[in-house]
Image (cartoon, rainbow, N blue to C red; front, side, top):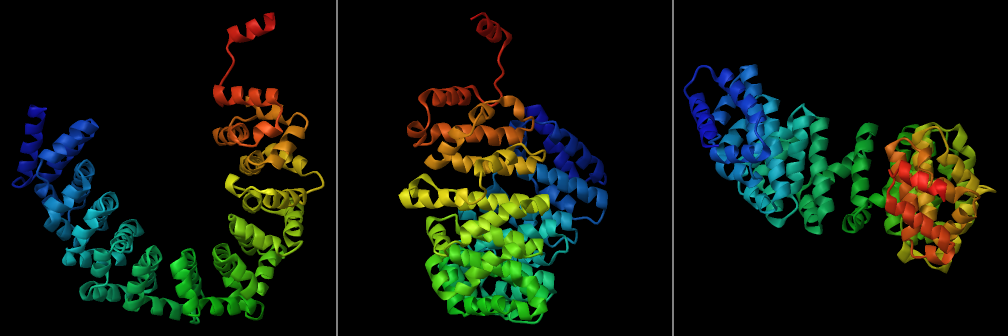
Amino acid sequence: MAANFDWFRQTVDRLAVSDSRRELLSELKVALCGLSARDLSSVANLLPLAPIFDSVNTTEKDQLELACDVLGKLMGALEPSTVLAQYGPQIQRTLMHPAPRAKELVLRELDRAVTSHVQMVERLSAEQDLLVCIIDCLSLEEMSAARYAISLMKSLGSCPVGLSALYSPITMQALQVASSKGDIIRFRVYEVVVAVSAQSDEGLKASQNSGFLRALFSELRGDDILAQLNVLEMTTALALQQHSLVFLDEQGILDFLAEKLTNSENDPLSSFLIPGLIKFFGNVAQSRPDEMVKRFPTLVSMMFETLEASDMAVLGTGMETLGFIATTLKGKYMLQSQGSKIPETLRRMVQKLPTLPTDVKVRLLNSISNILQLQVADQNNQSLSMTKRWFEALSPTPMDFVMSLCRQPFPEIRLAGFQLLHVLATNPWGQEYIVRAPGFVEYLMDRSTESLKPCKDAKFDVVRSLVTSPSSSSVMNPDVLEQLKDFMNQGEFYTRGETEVAIEGAS
């Protein structure tokens, strides 16, 4: 290793004085690619990277690419904190390089540093000039580089020190300059602000004081339908967190969007917003189901009506929203409070299924699984009786429907069918249906029915769920349960050996 290191050291030293940097960098790249991970780490920690950073400072394309390859290889082998601690000036200079590839290289390493080490956020917060350079990278046309700048800004807002740095006068000015460079860049800034707002109450207050949230909501009330679509998606992210949902309500956003959805039939342009609006209020309903029913009963009814939509985007989003609401027990009870709407909706979903594109079929089937799924902690007489009624509303012979899904030629449909089976396998009434279905337990233990690994995995998970369910011992025949346990212990890829088959045949 010593002789090897001498060569690396000499080659890097020659970079500083040689006119043949491209050849030296090429040799370094080949040599580094031949090292083990352990040796690469040793070389990276012993070599000075400054000459390689200097090699990036060029307009010669081949040299730039090679220098980035070598630098990326070495920095990737270092502890993320080491890079910023030892090479801060070089990093800042590289961020000012005109080539997006060079910017992306250091942005990726900085992002790795702050996501791996929380203390690096505080260190980065102290580097105001570096932060301004990172904010400037939000304006890059190449999203591959800009996304690291976005991620860095989001990480910065995750702690009090970072928040102060993000919204300091210097960085605020840089953010405002970036926002003025066009719609795409402005919405990248909004993306950072929304993410910071959703992270904590402190982040929300700081973002509100910055004025960016006010600007965001003004676009929601504007005339640009594409801008409204983008803002609505971001606002939906705020609705997922309780503290930011309260803020949206205080700002009148909930009432404004409710009115927009209610009046969407009278405004042709608003029809483009319907999927996003339904998704938004689905998040509200999942968080505040009781308030949603009392305050926005018309909107709840509209969610059920989406099944009749000819627009696949509206139909799929509507069903996914009902499924999302039903991921909590309170959400299920809210849906139950709508009387016969859920059973009728489930029945219509199954009836409509054959006419739908495959991707929409999968979305609807996954929504059915969410509606029927009950966590063990949520299983009681009321919830079990309720979900059983819903399952039986799918079809006069609901188990035949599920079995038909698992035997479809399309793997996406089979996977959705196995997901539905998994739901049945985790509760008592579902286990009773599985046990009573003629030949179905044997089907579950037949490894030859699936050749695709995702489907094999999903089918095997059904058996695992049956075996590990707390209620299976009281529902299933002990001998059948023992067979399923043996099947699970053997694994999904178990094959019987010739000797085993011969002995069994002799007996």
